[in-house]
Structure formats: structure tokens, C-alpha cells
Image (tube, rainbow, N blue to C red):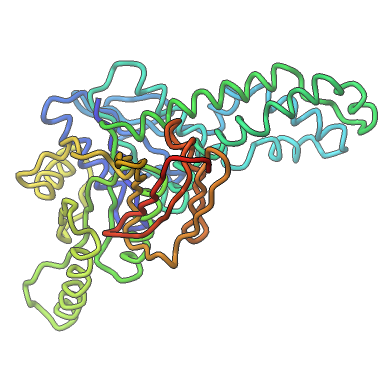
Length: 389
């Protein structure tokens, strides 16, 4: 099963390109689901058809779904929500305000991941296209599984043992209800499911596609998203440049835009060298409906297969040397001064700007010491040699 996630700065036409790709996949005979995790939920508008919290068929073989965060929260996290409401009640919070506060920040992103997992496991689809939230939200979404994994492995077991041993005493002292075992069980299930999501999205059949318009500000954000997606181990398989002005020379205003876009398009080619680059010209009418979206996608991808599985090992790999090994992590558009590196036990902490990844080392590398690191050809290379770390 092929999974393609579309992301990009808000307003670049990401939902339209995602919808077009899904429509083309269905037209070529693939049973296709296009899933929206963007709170704006523009898919229904793009298809000109209603879309709800369950997959609905908009044309033969093409289904649309928009994640209902509140509904999924009530279905999946009832134990957690009930506990939070009890705590807020004891604290004297108004019941109406408590209902709002009991929705955990980031719940929409979490539930979108869980819904994607459920659809991937149901066995009904050949292709799943994901219309992601704008770039910043997408990066938080995709960084979540590993971040929660660190908490579950390092902190959660200690918290659970403390509450189990000292719960009644802590409850009396703090005059607050302690979480019951069912709450801890719900968190454990959440972690296990998110761990499956991470494996699914970093697997060989999944990739992320960046959509942008030929504008300097948009390109700068697209470059950063390429870097951060690679940092967290997600494979970027191509870039779609949308809303390119055709060179018809009809007036000075349009000619100015053509000239400005041509300059940025040159930078796009340099910024994403080695990746497929697809172009979509500004159209005379907004593509709405399955037929118009399919036509758009055919023009964008031309003779390329939009569902081709990307080649290579992805952004993370390990190569062996005579004295140890080298860890390779692709970090495009990053210099050595942009990277902070630290070693804590069997974890390598890689920081780029405001983003940090705690990379659990493979068992073989955990027993080796870090002998050096460098940035070369767009990737971080960390050299390990035998001996104590």
C-alpha cells in the first residue's frame, strides 16, 4: 500500500494538489482514500462533494475522509478525559470551561495519526493520500511519535510505580484524585499505536511531498520543512511548484510576475536538486470536482508515475567501517554551525534550530564511542569506533 503525505505553507494549493493526485490514482484503477488532517478541511470544497468523519465515495474507487478530532477524542480517550474532568472539578473549574480544558493540546494531530493508522491497517486501500496541516503543524505531528516514545521509556514507568505505591497518600496530601490504572493503560495503548504510525510513515512505501508556490518566502519555509522532515527520518519524494504564471506576455504586470517567478524557480531547482520537481501553471479557472482535479494531476505529473516508490534507504542509514561504523542522517540546507550534537547513553541528541531529535542508536552502535562528526554533502556523518562511549 502506498502512502503519500502532502504538506506546505498555508495557501499554496496543497489540498488541491493532494486531491488531484488522489483522483488520478483512482482513475488509474487504485482504490484510493484521501484523508484530511488539516483543520481547515478543504477537501470537500475541492471535490465539490460532502465529506465526513468516515470515508465517503465521491467517484468510483475514490473516497474522502476528514478527521473529526472531537469525535475521535471521545471514542479513544474517554478514560483520560474523565480523569482530567475529575481533577478540574476538584480544582473548582466551571464545568463548561472544564470540558474545553480537558481536550489535550495537540489532540487533533494525535487523532489524525491514529486515524491514518486505522485506515492503513484495514486492508481496504491501495493508496492513501494525506492532506496534512500547514508545515509547522505537520512537523509537530510527525515529531510526536518519537517524542512520546522517549517519555514512555524514560518517565512513564517511574510515574506509574510512584502512583501505584503512594497514590492514596499523595491523593490525601494534594487533595486531588490520582490517575487510575485504566488511565495509564490508555496512555500505554496510545504510545503503542503511535509507535506503529512512526514505523508506517518511515517505511519504504511512505513519503512526504512538498507543495510550494514560486515565491521567496514560501521557498524559504519549504527548504526548512525539507530539512526538518529529514531530521525526523521522513522521506521527501518530490516537490510540486504550483501557480506558475504562463509566459504569454499579455501585459507588463503579468510579465513582472513571470520574471520574478523565473528567478525563484531557479532557486527551487537548486534547493531540491536530486528530487523530482513537478510544475503546475496558473489555470484560467479553479479546478473543482473529480474530473477537473484528475486533468490537473495528469498535466502536473505528465509522464511520471505519481505513486512511484522512492528509491534508496531514506534519510537515515548506517554503514560499517573496519574499526566501527558511520551513522548518516540527511540534513539538506544545514551547515556544521547549525547542528548541535550530544551523546546520552544509547541516544544521540541532534538539534537543528528549534527542533531536537533524540535518536536511539542501534544496539551495535550503543556499545561504541563517538569518534567524530561532520557535515558533508548535505548529511550529518557521525563516526563510531569500538570502545566505551
